[in-house]
Length: 65
Image 1 (tube, rainbow, N blue to C red):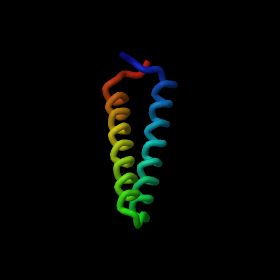
Image 2 (tube, rainbow, N blue to C red; image 1 turned 135 degrees about the horizontal axis):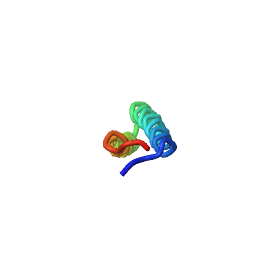
Image 3 (cartoon, one colour; image 1 turned 45 degrees about the horizontal axis):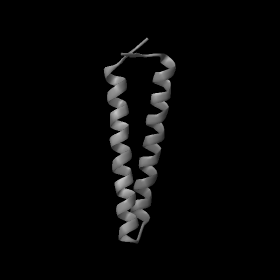
Image 4 (cartoon, one colour; image 1 turned 90 degrees about the vertical axis):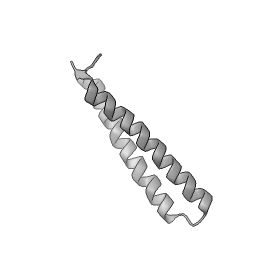
């Protein structure tokens, strides 16, 4: 399977958005005084990190047309 340059660009944009979301959730977790809110933010950051890793695997294993 191969990607067009536009598809690759869209995936790269999604990776950047995921990075921003991770940073935001980590900041929220650090700022939260409530344990449940802190845990939720940490969980969301981990989930987004896993999503980002999946996207990275796709672009590193697929050729661009």
